[in-house]
Length: 362
Image (tube, rainbow, N blue to C red):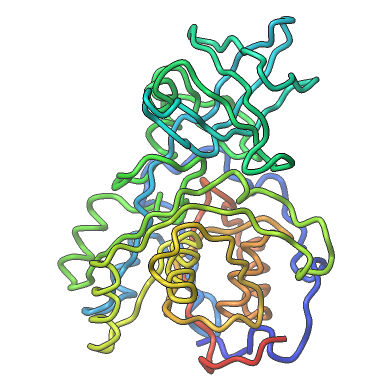
């Protein structure tokens, strides 16, 4: 069990979370079988190399797995300006999906020269996108558009899978199937909750037979998850907002798990962000920009299943806060030496929350 205190005795800067990752370890495609990926067991003092389908043997009867049931939408749309210049939209959030409320969306826009508000863009597939301005305010990071039809229907028909920037191939039918969890339910994410991509029906059945219970949250992963940290002082970084919900049934399942002495196992950092946001800000909160760095005191999660993250990313800071900085860096050194696959289509690791549970912030 890791024993290092995450952040209690030092102040961290961005450079502390850097490491050299060979490009060959960035997974470009998923493993042939979801549960055939590798699993690094980091719950002990030394790492243990496993296969993901071993996960049920590492959990106990009465533990509670909490999944993020968000569904990735084909949010990347292509089109052109009236001048003929090509452009790309990445729908970050559907603001009003229905005709009587305007079919409005908030999106990132990639174009050589930004059009002015009021511009009508001709999109591939024959529909239009009218630029209304910035979002959420006049100088907001996104753009607000009115589409000529239902946004979800347009994305389903004409959109492309919003693969992460480090995946270099164009989206394919394989990506439509594999950049999505087997239990995806609520559409709205532009990036997959990647730790959950390893689960298949066989592993889920084994977990149920073992007496491990399941619950779900919904956090619609935004493109901001790939936003780099641009300041060496972590406190100066502004996190992106993401919509989330922790249903009452999940809150009750967590309370029951704690009461019986079980462990709450978060599947992915997005699940951690949802659970910890609800615990900190209340269940009525449905938009979070929580930034978890070393020194954070966790309220809910006992174990974390996660993929391997980008150097200097906010997710490296989160896992370091959870399991201890030195422990995490040692696990990453082991993973690189053993040729684990990194990022969205990569392998997974299982982490335990560092003790003691009460940690003095740095």
